[in-house]
Image: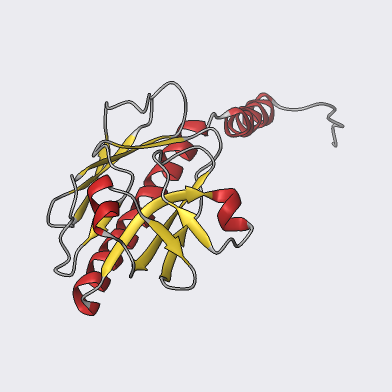
Length: 191
């Protein structure tokens, strides 16, 4: 005796609803916090690697190494010189270079300029996303490593703020000895 069944059993219906619920949860999951955390952490870890490299380069070559923000437009247009800017965010990119011609007045005024004809560009860190902010609490426009690998000016913290609500801010500390430490979560704001 064969009975012809039409429709679904209660078990089949419950499994289908459960699968649709899981797929909907994944589809509507707000991953912006995770993306902001990753973006901030990755940028600061890249900066940490470049700071360590700049420090070792200064000590091993007995030359002055500068890390500073420069105008992204000047860099992209391949200008022959880039002046270190005062802010670390906005339309800037961070460059690391061996500085061969800093004058005594420039050191006193805490200024530096990369000159393609004289200086050696070591590395470039890509600019931050236009919605993000980067702040250096050392109140300097650059990190200057002397020939011993020490920082010549005030050390401080780099604070990366991946959004305007200061929710997922991350920090990187730079010491007077030129070493950098990734701190992670911070309550310090960029504004």
